[in-house]
Amino acid sequence: IRNTSNNDLIFCLISGGGSALLPLPMKGLTLGDLRDVNSLLLASGANIKEINAIRKHLSAFKGGRLAKAANKNGEPTIISLIISDVVGDNLDTIASGPTVPDQTTYEEAINYLKKYKIFDKIPENAQKILISGYKEEIPETPKKEDPCFFKVHNFIIGSVEDAAKAAESYLKQNNIEVKYIKEKIKGEAREYG
Image (cartoon, rainbow, N blue to C red; front, side, top):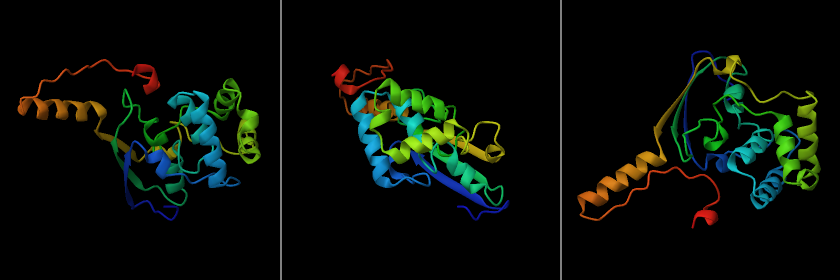
């Protein structure tokens, strides 16, 4: 992906869970470091927005960095076909937004870790990267004005709502009573039963 040209066309197939399948760490980190950070985050009670802000700043591809990497030697056209698993279909949340401008910062990532009192518990390599980013010693995740997004086209081709409607339709066609609750719920599943 780092050897693309202006005439190349890249298709990205992105879905929920993609973040776990795209774990390339930033230089200076190991997969073990990312695993340790992720374990601490999941146990902390942080919400998905907070978790993704941290993941994006420790990953070589998340938070728009896949689009940035593809633009290293050229300006290819990138078409991302996305299946959303998040309430509201927020593109930068789905799979941590590898082809989407990031709206978060190193400072936010550090603050979330401190909020849950785990900054000092994450691997030292991860702390160093976050601090270096905060001090602007390494580049921030690409933002919406970055030229790497000029030829990126993101399309949601399916969502949780689409799946729910299809299931409802199928069940009704098979004479099964359905109660479709359209209220959008965010949070820990254990809190909602």
